[in-house]
Image (cartoon, rainbow, N blue to C red; front, top):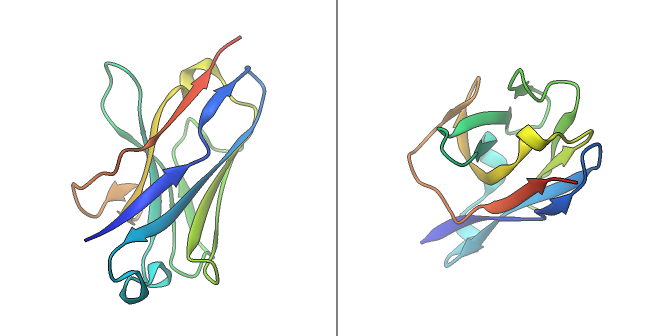
Length: 125
C-alpha cells in the first residue's frame, strides 16, 4: 500500500515561515508516480472541519489556493524528486492545525477520503 507522507511541520512564531514536504512512501513505490496526479494540501484545526489549502496540477503549472492562504502560501512540486511542497509565509495563529497532503480534484477537493498522519503546524508566540 502506498501512502503520502507529510513532513516539515513544527512550532513557529506569528509572521514566520515553514516549508512542508509531501512524498510517496510504501511498497511498490516505483509504481506510484505522483507526477500523474494533482496533489493537494489540506488542514484541520482543532474542533474544525478539514479544509483545502492548495491543489497543484500534475505539471505544476496550475495552483488553486484557499482564500485564507492566498498571497501567503506557495505550493510547488519537483516531479524529478516525486515531491510536493508547501511554502508557508507570514504565518498566523489561525494557520495552526494538522496539515495533510493527498490527491486532489480542482479546485480544492480531496480525490479520496484517505488520509495519512499529517504534520502538525503550530503558530504561536
